[in-house]
Length: 351
Image (cartoon, rainbow, N blue to C red; front, top):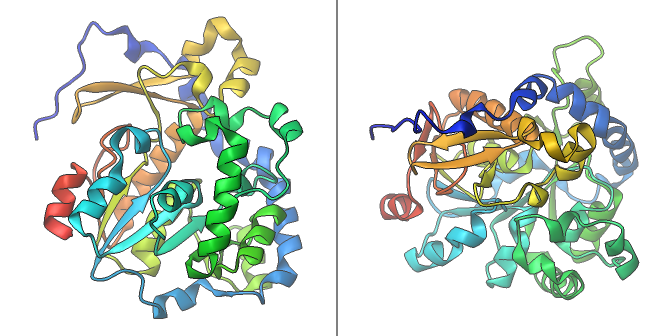
């Protein structure tokens, strides 16, 4: 298609001056924020690696039919576009690969993904996607992360949703294959083990393994589990699984927005509190980058972390063996190597 440029008079393109400076430093910022957590989790998980198999074994397992796969992530487009309805209606037989954050969406619709992927090392948030056995009202009062964001609207009633997820994951756990990071939190690993999921261990690259004193190389030597570039986020990790591990040739993305709809208040974004602490309420426009999507002729916006993820993904896709189709129908992930098409169009060709 012929891409349309944004209106030349639109001032949104001028926002994000500070954010653009921060993107270049996000690798260092991220390691500073989670590095110690990553190493602690890895050390704690080493004795548990005998519970499960290497990710390499997944290559010997049938994961969906044919050479197609659809990634289901949990970006804000999921509850606006409702991709599962279209996927089920089309009778798609390829691999359905869900991020842990979209597993709840799948299970609520009575769909057991062919593979679930998790990578985030956070000590107590990520387990919420599996159902947290230790969740209390007191915990919720201290953290508005889930109910504040424009993600899964069901998390507005957090206690009820948690009880539902506990039941769903306990019921279907034995049928779920999970690519479980060696750096996952103790809460996530214990929950996965308790639910009986079929574990395939892997390690996310945390630095360049060719560097002297590389942490990634040291982790691989100690655990001997495959090390993979996860792109800094679970959606990119799921895409990498489809391409590099399962060998799928046509991979569609849903829910990978890497940004927010233009009508989303800043307060409902993932890193709002961090942005507020950094610059204050009056300067928030400096921390958010507004990007015009020429395929949808619509403005979206993003923060430094998601802008960084976008840059990494656009680099990764250049080396992929698969064709990548962004069927999110929203967000900011477009560029060389990505076919930006509707999910209906992908399903027509690859169902």
